[in-house]
Amino acid sequence: MSRVALLSNPRSTGNRALLPRVRDYCATHPDVFHYEVEHVSQIAAAMCTIARIRPKVLVINGGDGTVQAALTELHGGRHFGDTPPPVAVLPNGKTNLIALDLGAQGDPLHALERVVELAKADLAPHIVERELIALTSGANETRPVLGMFLGGAGLADSILYCRHKLYPLGLPNGLCHFLTALAVLFSSLFGIRAAFLPPRPAPVRISLVRDGQLSGRFSLLIVTTLEKLLLGGRTQPGRGRMKLMAVDQSPWALLRMVRETLLGRFGRQRVEGVHMEQGDLIRIEGERSNVILDGELFLADRDHPIVLRTTPPVPFLKLAA
Image (cartoon, rainbow, N blue to C red; front, side, top):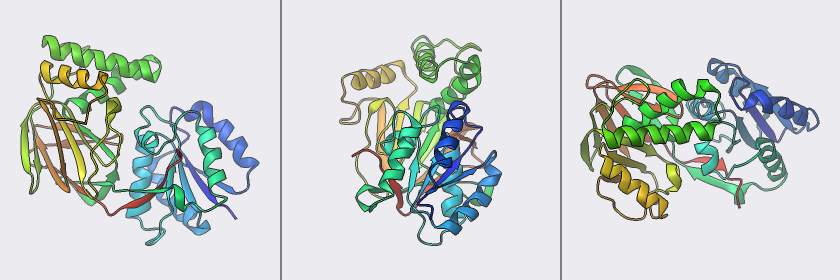
C-alpha cells in the first residue's frame, strides 16, 4: 500500500537536477506512488488516479504555480470527496513561499524522506489547517482558482520583471530577487522610468467588503493566508480571514518598511504608508492591473474586478517541529 502520493512537475526549473534523484528514491520505496505531469491540464487525471490509492498524504514537487493548480483541482474537483489527504510541499521552486510556511527548507529530497518517515506513524500531531484564497473574476466565470499567496500592484509588476528580464539570464534565484528589489527601490526613490526597470504600478482600488477600502498606487500589494510574509514578516492571527498588506507608492513608505524589516519589527506595529488589514471578502479593481496568485497571472480592471474569498480550512503537513 502506498502511504505517500508524490505529484511531480518535470518542467519545474528545480526538477531539472532533482527529478533523477527523486525517481531513484521512489524506485526503492514502494510506499511512494509517483505521478509525473508535464502540463497543468494533466493534473485532473493525476488526482483521479491518486484518489484510487487513498494515500495518507499528498506531496507536491514543483513550483508555486504547480502547487496552486494542484490545490485547485484537489479541492475543486472533489476527487477525495469531503476527506482530501493533507498536502506537503517540497521546497522546489523559485520562491517556495508555501513550502517555507509549512516548514520545508533545504534539500527537497530530504524533505520527501521526512514526509515518508512521518507517514509511517500518526500524522495528527503534524497536521495544520490553512484557509485558501478562492479567486474569481468577471472575465472568468468558471470555478474559483485556489491559492495561498497573491501579489498585486507593484509587486506583481516586479515578479513579472524578475521572471522575464532576470531569470532568462541564468542567474541564481536569490540574486535575481535581490536585483529586482534594488531595481524597485531605485526607481521608487529617484522616480526614474526606463525599459530596464520595473514599470510604474497602475492605480488600483481594494475593497474589503464590510471593512472599508483603499485606493491609490501601491509598491506592494499582498493578500495571503500564509503565516509568513515576504521579508521575514509574519501575519497577525485571524482565522477565516485573509491578510492584506499594501505599501503606498512612495519612497518614504518603502524605506520605512525596509527599516522595520531590518530591525526585525515588521508586522508587529503600524508603519506610516503601510496598510495591514484583514477580511474574508476582498475586491480588487484597477486599470488593467496585474495580479498573480501563486504564479498564475490575472488582470484586474473596472469591468472585470477580481474577487477573493476564503475557503473552509484544509489540512497540510507541517515538516518543522
